[in-house]
Image (cartoon, rainbow, N blue to C red; front, side, top):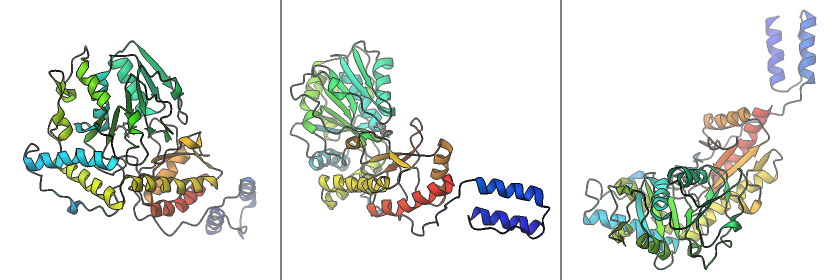
Length: 416
Ligand SMILES: Cc1ncc(COP(=O)(O)O)c(C=O)c1O
């Protein structure tokens, strides 16, 4: 009898017709059959055969660029002082090539600073805030971190807070042009981006401080509307974590030179000396010792952006990637963008919700990881359950296309 029972169960799991066992003590078995027949029929899909060539879809550190080979890095700076001529030249190039490729306006400074994007954001918050009232906009984890800095660490009095839940943007038109405004261009953990900067006044007297770590090199940034822009290397360029990039408009420099905060300033945040900007920081003379290996890696990434056609090409790559996911979501009733307004869907950190419970979503992430078709695509730990698929410039469209049948497969496996 045992083999007959086992055969029936295997048949059921494949959703094929099953025959009643020949010899059976019938009562419990037929109760079992009735139970199974009442359950909805499963439609498991066959496992796709082709896998993405590169399964790295993490939202940071993000995939290395196509064709990346660590052996190709120019490591002639390694083991040398970062203040040697060769070291300063490499660091200076990190600043000047960035300005050139991004097409920054005349007078904008670019500096390499410690502690990645967080370092860049916090050194500017600590350096310029307190001079004016502050308007702060937050709609996901990192924007909320800056809100904590402003209200709980710096304990500023005159702060207007505008927040929104995951999937939405706060009302940015509330920004007062005479206040300092803090916001994130692309909410990496929500997949919600700012569509434009029409809400920022050209005649503002306050500073606009923009955390743009998941946006720079993938989105059109209206530089003239932004006084402070920060980002890190490991996002759109697939560089290494470690250092932040701090871009300052002339108005931001003016504030740094005319205002001294009341609180103590750690050395790592100090950008002025005797009331003047330390210009060297924006020519590659870093505040403290950087990783020259990370710098070499960053320069390789910048050369790659140039080689594919510069900023417009890297923006286009990311937009084309989003189009692939949009096509998928449009024909899957069970998948939805987190971003509620289609114009605000991020083209880098693409966040999806699925008509599944949290455990089932986790199972999908695990299944795809186990099959080595997608690594690190679960939603950010503080965000609602879902998938987050990085679509920045270093991700190949063909890899996303190869991933999608696997999403279908995993969805059906888990919901069945
Ligand atoms: C919008 C945003 N801001 C800040 C950070 C923190 O960046 P980092 O780890 O480079 O300091 C992240 C990281 O994902 C981010 O997405």
